[in-house]
Length: 268
Image 1 (cartoon, one colour):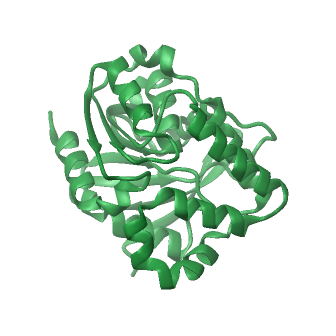
Image 2 (cartoon, rainbow, N blue to C red; image 1 turned 90 degrees about the vertical axis):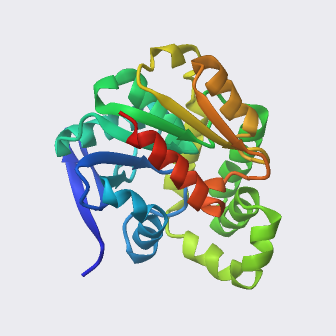
C-alpha cells in the first residue's frame, strides 16, 4: 500500500488533483512551485512524500495541483482562490501553510484574502513582486514554451534551480532527470509561468495577520535572496537566508529547512 493518497477535489467551477499523506491531527497545506509535471503519478507523488514525509507525524499534509481546465490568462490571485475553494471542499481551516517559489506567491494571496484558512505561514524562496531576475527567467521559459521546446525549459530549470555541487553529483543522471520532468503540455506550462509575473502583494503584506517565517537562498538565481528579504522587511517577521543556497535550497538542505519549518509550525 502506498504511503500517499491521490484524489480529485471538486469545487464550484472546477476540479484539481491532490496528493495527501500523514495522519497527524493538524492540517498542513504544501503549495509547490512552478514545474513541468503535475503532483499526481508515482514519480511526482513519491518525490513529495520523500521530501516532506516527516511532517506527517504531526500533520495530515495536502498538496494541490493547479486546476485542470486553465483559463487563457490565469493570475496568482485566481490560483489562490481555487486553492481556498479546494481547502473549503475538504474542510481544511486554520492550516499550517508552506509555499515555495510560485507556491509562496500563491500562499501570500491566500493569507491576505482568506486569513481564517491559515494558522501559520512559511514562505520559501519567493517574492512579493517581480524583479528583473525573475522577469528574465520567466521570459526565457515562456519563449521556449511557445516553441514547444520543453527540453530547453527542463534543462534551464535544473541549471537555474540547483547549485553547481548538486549538478556535479547528479551529472550522469541529468538527461534522465530532464526527461522525467517533461509531462506537462507547453500550453499549460506557458499559462502557469506567465502567472508568476502577476505577483503584486508587496503593498498588501500588512494584511497578513498570522505568524510568518521567510526562508531564502543567498545564491537564488530565480527570485533572488532580495525577494525574501523584501518580504521579511515589510512584515518584520523571522527570516533565515541560506547564504550558499540556491533556489532549491528546500531540497538541497532539506533536513535543516524542514527542521526550521517544523519548529515554527509547532509553536502555539
